[in-house]
Image 1 (tube, one colour):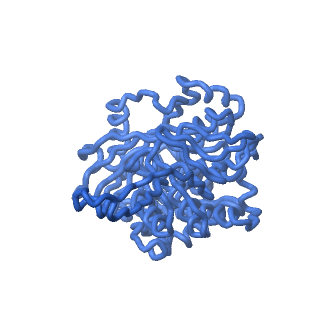
Image 2 (image 1 turned 180 degrees about the horizontal axis):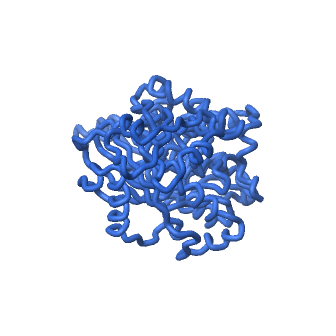
Image 3 (image 1 turned 45 degrees about the vertical axis):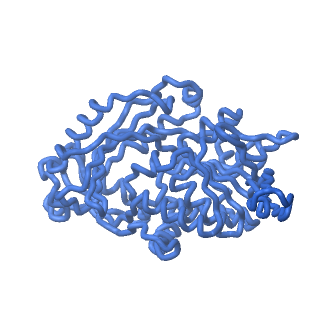
Length: 422
């Protein structure tokens, strides 16, 4: 932080020009500012956490490497699966999360585009609807089984020949970019600072204690560091010699401009393959593969579905790949063709719409629960990442984390510590 002192020296020498009478000497010197918290990442996790920390009166600097969002928050579907809790822990978090989402626009004084709509979980022709319904009976709010006719009445764009029925349940939805922007504006109003810089590593003090982070152009200092960098959290910590059981998929989708076609619901397959892929690709015996680029622990999967945002644009997908290199090359044309064919079979009106292929990384953990709290083996570094159901639980967990940061004990957060896999 530069502090400029201006010293006026009138009447320096009578023979000088009149400018000498108002001569100012500017002396600049730098004072190293130390924050209570540095939050690395400006996606939904970093945006929510930095706001909640600042709300508790803490000084917070948030670092982001892009001026505009580029990752999973930019391309997220925005679904809030608050109905999907299966344990006491996840049911409580989902209940807290949806309660916050319903009032968040008012709290942040900005529109998150929150709404509740029908989720349609399509059942493939070769699947038994009753069996699929039974597999969803353990959720906090079990989805209702619909016949083909009922499903098509709820969503007229469905192809009746491509499904054996569907499940439906009310589902929350926000614009991921709108909610991140709302959090950011509220954070800045609270005195929070946002700096564009790419974090390359942790900054260590004399005794090895972490005292901040290193960017490309500067070092930043703080009492605590929260890593909210999503999929890149693993590589950032690995560079510091800190192993964590955090993984990522390469997610692909097609984004259309606003279109005249109207999709009433969020459509996804009832038999979602992504969660099984995540569980199988993150077992302990495969962990060594993640430490080297160029590996593909599991083959790619496709969960054919679509959502229409309030501005009329569609997001169609989703292909998920497990590639251990964050920068692995992907055949975009082939992926786009595959997604269009699969989605077009279920929703024929969407298959040929003009759109652009996009790709982002999505972080996850082995047990579908996030990694939250102190990183084992290093002081003052915390993780807030690995959310498989982010929008349902991030707001509530960010609030709990901030309360714990000012000394309020939280037994729930203790169940999410990163060292649970050690």
